[in-house]
Length: 383
Ligand SMILES: Cc1cc2nc3c(=O)[nH]c(=O)nc-3n(C[C@H](O)[C@H](O)[C@H](O)COP(=O)(O)OP(=O)(O)OC[C@H]3O[C@@H](n4cnc5c(N)ncnc54)[C@H](O)[C@@H]3O)c2cc1C
Image 1 (cartoon, rainbow, N blue to C red):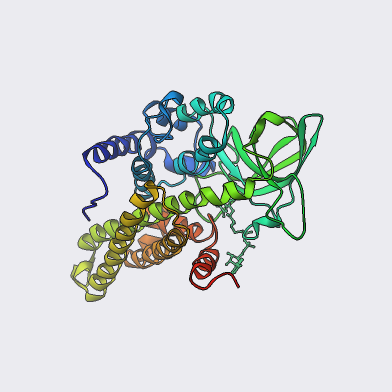
Image 2: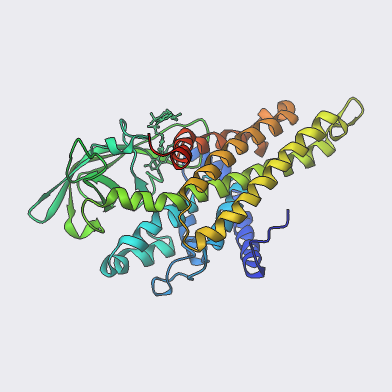
């Protein structure tokens, strides 16, 4: 599909990033899947070529490019079935917390390393008993002698094994009547005493991504590592979730597109009952339906992305995009895999990876049921 969203400079950037994927990622990805993580160096290589934090300010080494360049990075990684290289998490989900809420001294300390890929980023919100109900989080940060002492555990943290800097949500106070209040955000370096990475959790897909438990045991954090103002963490999280969910929807559309394209090529080659599989009406209708869904997803995103760029508040519509496009991604991957027959079940065929990697998209970044709840709240009011 011709996208009207991108101009020549975006498409030139896409070409360069595609070459980077071909040269630096595709040949190694199977190995990285076995290792359960990508090598840290891939971040440095990407940083050296300007593929990380493209929207960052020039004074931190960024290109001050618009968000469409970030969208292209996400599209290409998902399109090439290598989403475990989670640059969008680093650049578009976590880095904006630093950009928006750090003071100049904090930015000078951390931002250039993020743009260069020397400081890999992660965000730690979820806890064993606080996922969808994030306000139930219990990790505690107590201020003593001008330092915060953190205690608690986090789980399911992407980049948990390889990250150097974690944006961590912790409680600095608790009022049972207002659980959203009293949450603060901290930037925590991985070498702080009392911080421990837990297991790299085994998963059904997304194998090149490291997803970890984290523990804080009397972890001492200087007061300068507080992000923004104490107690404002919930507001900061809500502000940034729009972009997080939009990026996941962008990846979902590109992944679904990739499924359709690889299946189209396959069914033209595969012979059944003396003719190409592409001649069966069921095959043709399945691909026609999936291609239509991809087109609708892109059209929706092409409306949302410029409005997001213009600073519009789009929580309801972005929630629609996140839930509908990730549901579509899963269903398209499933239907396309079916057309590959037994080959689709074999891991050497990328459609199998698209199928397993799609599943998490309906869970993280806010489960799709939570997205529907947010949409319903805009439609109907809160109760
Ligand atoms: C691979 C992976 C990577 C992740 N990366 C990160 C990360 O980097 N940082 C981070 O902080 N977190 C991360 N997460 C956590 C993720 O955001 C949570 O798993 C998600 O928010 C759901 O929380 P939960 O798992 O505790 O499920 P629960 O909250 O226990 O919910 C379980 C299910 O119940 C249903 N449900 C829950 N509440 C409602 C409701 N109000 N109405 C209707 N249905 C409901 C939904 O179907 C939901 O899927 C990651 C998760 C995975 C699997």
